[in-house]
Image (cartoon, rainbow over all chains, first blue to last red; front, side, top):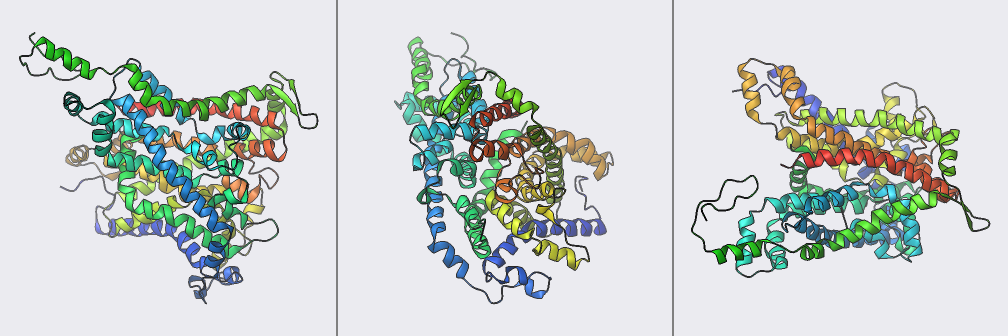
Length: 284
Length: 315
């Protein structure tokens, strides 16, 4: 039976839908392609090759790696490494802390669990950026400015991660926990040997949200890490857009590098991420 | 003992002979003392105090004083900072610009995300590739989106080149107070629409096909199905997306900081940029903190709605 939930029900309609769909896809992808092409262009050609538009606008001619060399050998390379380090630590430690909390809330049935759950999730739903300015004052007075700890700490607890993991833990049959307890496993053992290994999809989904938070963060590193050795990737990128000199080629090469990392992860893990989305707001 | 204990909402456990001591053991194993739970929760609760409560309390405290940079002294101000802010024309313009921004960006992003999600649900050749193309910009960090579009918006940039090819006149974009805010909305929508589409695609997949089968028997067309079945069943997802998009849009900061610094003539001075600029560039921390508190009051309301939408998902 043909269902009426599709617009493309007849030949001509299907053609219109196909053209519209591909046009939308190309519109989203075109800027990325343009960024990639410009990253391979000589600085002086970035504007002359596209204005006015000609066939030359679509190919870097001659192609050059100079922008990537400039970007990787300078301060920017160091900043990308800083970003990677901060992000990886935040994901590992953040997942651990979130999973501990989610486990306590989903499996350990103590009095007031649902109240604590509300407080924790509600608290972390308050977006971090809204408290970033007052928090940066506190962090400076605690001596955490320009330290890796200062950069990492805000990413360690995510309400979204706790929420996803708690949903997943709660769906694990309680009989499994009981059986393990009868066999003499402690609460820690149940967490470490049963709930964590069974929750890979949820951990990937939650890890992805922590990743995006850390990798994208801009306001916080701008506030707390101003020392050149501690600057993170996105801030270093804006430095190419200087007040007196703009390094156009470097902006594009740096953009490619900063986008490539999440893009690869997105392509690999999109399935898990979308799956974790269904367990949150969307399902009812 | 006749029947096994029933777990809340569950089916009664099958009757099974059981000695008293076994059932006590079972109860003991099941019960977890609160101290255990507290130990598991401690790191998250500690972070909650440090990363949310402490800065919120700090902002409220600082906003009640006047801090003088020249004399390094604090003077009790009460609600003076708030009164000053709310009566100053500059701050009123910030609120007006932020409201205008929200009123445009949220419907545009959610509407287009719904359109894109609907198209992605069609059986079009190569739909997997299109789906990837729509989602890929989500990977671009905000700084990347802002800076690259900033180059595209230049007077001799690629967008004016395309307009020229179409026979249209050059546009000023970021340097015009009429266009700058819209230009920023376009930048944020390039990455934002794909992100919200992900939620809506997931929501569409959750609608039971049986509903459409029933509609097919009744002879309903696509539009009737979309209005009577798709939209009502997508209501919760849409509500969540609208609220979450509102929260993230209120916090828009990167394109303003990187491209326009609030200009031209205050037309892009969104609240996050204003409170950042007031606190650091202008060094007026007390007013900046009062602004943080006002922002938090608005956000907590929105977040409470978001929380209700989230928890409605669980049984």
